[in-house]
Length: 169
Image (cartoon, rainbow, N blue to C red; front, side, top):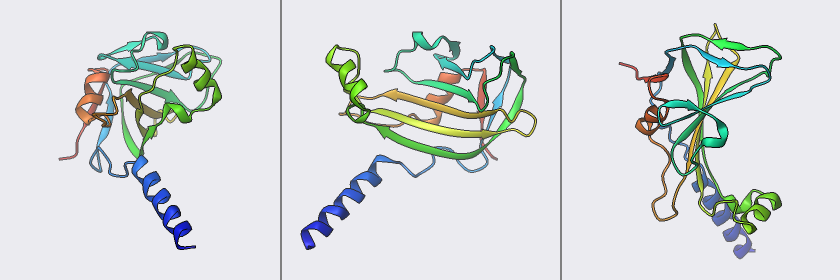
């Protein structure tokens, strides 16, 4: 019985290590959209890499990249204008590519999936004026020898001048 309790305790401890509960951004940090961003009809995400908006199929997963998402997919174009967004919560996780199911395993067998863990930071955003924008997810694949989540500086470099991080005074 003691062995079973010890195994359960170790499993809980190891799973706790998978999520970094310490926030990478101080309380009161905001994100400021500095220019219009257009979501085409039925589009739910805009992708950022190297300081600019890019197509989803051009992202280098080994480099930092971010996805700005909307809550509701609309049949019309949505244009979001410059605005400030507060952070409602932040979630960080490490995704083990081997645990993503049989489809990912099959892709790996054909050279399509990565063996590297993906370090993900989800930043939930809120603006009273533009409430359909709700999440900015920033991630990258990382070598197991040097694991780390993206820093605020990495995230800012990924977003460029389109969206800026503003820290509290």
